[in-house]
Image 1 (cartoon, one colour):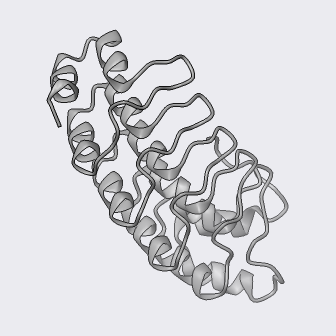
Image 2 (cartoon, rainbow, N blue to C red; image 1 turned 30 degrees about the vertical axis):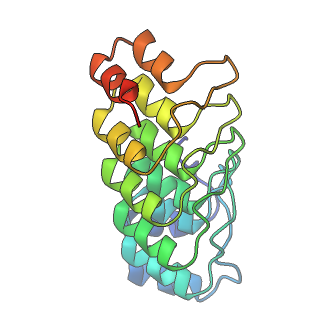
Length: 196
């Protein structure tokens, strides 16, 4: 995920980044689309989600901004909120019926993005919202495999409590236990070795 590049609509995107709701409203009054994209194919809602601008996100959702538009990587506003750990924007998007199980071009879900960044509370919110726990990315990795490889015991526990499969294998035929052992995470090895 990269930073947005300046475009002719940079003032609008700057207002979304900084949370300037008044300026954003004024500028939107003359625009015909709330779903315009910057040079990284990010919408205003994605920029608001990335920068934890809840009021901006509320305004855009209320004006009818589309929730499932993707950027050039296939990420949505919800994915950006999960990746950045912006839980309030994430909750807003979920309550607005954003799909928590959409995958980006790498096959990664918002849950995987949250796990990869170690956002424990975001992981819990996504699971409560119905995130598919054993979805696989393009390499066959699951959220549990990511967490085990990183050594994040708290997230591993939450995923196991939510019934993540310890038997799932990635494209290299490796399980979460294999990832924990390969990365020298004895606490995770112990968690994954417990009988169910």
